[in-house]
Amino acid sequence: MAFELPALHYATDALEPHIDKTTMEIHHDKHHQAYVTNLNKALEGKAEASSSIDEIIKNISKFPAAVRNNGGGHYNHSLFWNILGPNKGGEPTGALAEAINSTFGSFADLKTKMQEAGATRFGSGWAWLSVSADGKLQVSSTPNQDNPLMDIAEVKGSPILGIDVWEHAYYLKYQNKRPDYLAAIWNVVNWDAVAELYKKAL
Ligand SMILES: [Fe+2]
Image 1 (cartoon, rainbow, N blue to C red):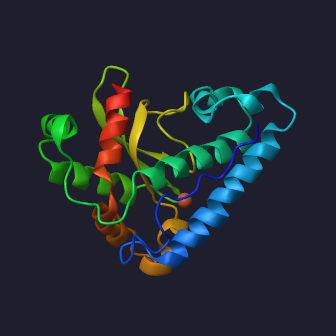
Image 2 (cartoon, helix red, strand yellow):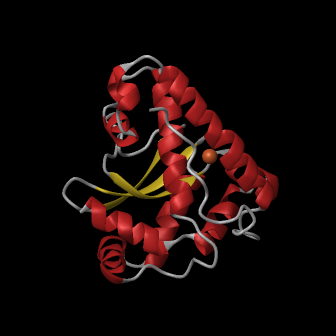
């Protein structure tokens, strides 16, 4: 079965003013769709076309670049839409908040680390909060559409929060001011969704 573009579970203008409607429309309907279309093309006629996206990503070293780029794009964006939401923001709670405090010092320290990871990623890529195999929280960044779940990642783990720092994610509203986008995005992070992924990763 071919991979499909997942529907957004909120309106394209729901993240205004932090992420504008036009950016959401182009980002979801055009960019993410292109990753899905090209992933399906790259896997056409191959047995792996019926694998889950997670299985493909975990074994990405066995695939050609087109699958790494477009499969990564599909996985990363599916996660990204899921961990954002309208009227969100605030702070994480419960076990996730405790883990953040014990690992990074405070929620503010985590934000600083994530913003640094995103701001210093040269060119296109992602900033990540992931859970290592031994259950530790870790911040990292990856180039292009790579992610920590890939077997080729420098810092491996299960991603629970990903911030897209490709220019297509912010350029219409923030232009060259990537740090402003990275500061604003906390207003629309859905911490319930992140906590759910944290629970699953442990
Ligand atoms: Fe993107």
